[in-house]
Length: 397
Image (cartoon, rainbow, N blue to C red):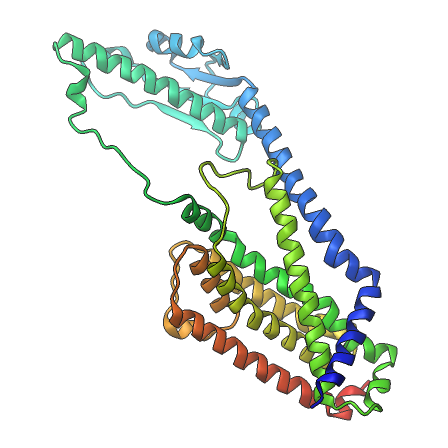
């Protein structure tokens, strides 16, 4: 095996890929321009919608208002609540969005207040509508204030202080450092995003330099050269790895720009200072490189086996869907893997990423993940070389 030949194939595939405008769009324009615009746009319109819901007045129908004049006065004093007193008990107005909430007051409200008996109020709202949720919060706030007022009046009649109801005061202190809070925040989505970016970055290039060469008929030029099949496969695989890794890094930069814009969908996290130690970065890359190699080797093998680009895309789609599924599992809160599960590719990397970002270093998990991904990548590379050595696979129609 000659590393010089591998380098020639690597440079050839890299130059060919960079010349393709689709690669420039996928590698640079989408991660660095589209991602920030997309996330910032979603965040901006989400904030605008939320602000409009908070600023708008809440129309509330009250049944039985005559039984609770003091409560109604509290509701009327709230400037963003518009009270509608109607006799019709039809839920259609709430369902159609004409009103945002309906409050039902029982006939014995005044009697139970005087005799200090518990009263059941019913508040109907639509949790799928933002304005209705805002109305529910506003009514809850007012009722809580009115309830506190009643409790104070009752305590006064009994000549008791307000402290009588609060024998214990719990003071909470968060011991988590800013770095740990940042890691906890990043550990939710970052492992999933890294895995998705790796595979999306590798797919186009892997298909184009394998199945695409079959369609264009240029693969025969490589086969008649003095370069061995293993060297060709390694050169192609290394090119896919570089493109995949670069695409992933640019994607993360784009997402970071979107987050730091202040209008991103993620918004901001109060009290969090983003920063990752050098040791954590080193361990992340230690786990990352075998995963990039695994993704590249598998996709190159599939591309070599496929007759054309369309067939390769059909084969890669279920692989990509499986990758998404395994990545989603890592998002699940409280989910933990057994030691044997760290042998499962993709799933193991996502959980190790999550652990590292949380500041937890388990060398057994890191070593198992690194070894498992290296071995599976080697098997995929061996399979790709065997397929590339078979003329009936390369030239079948």
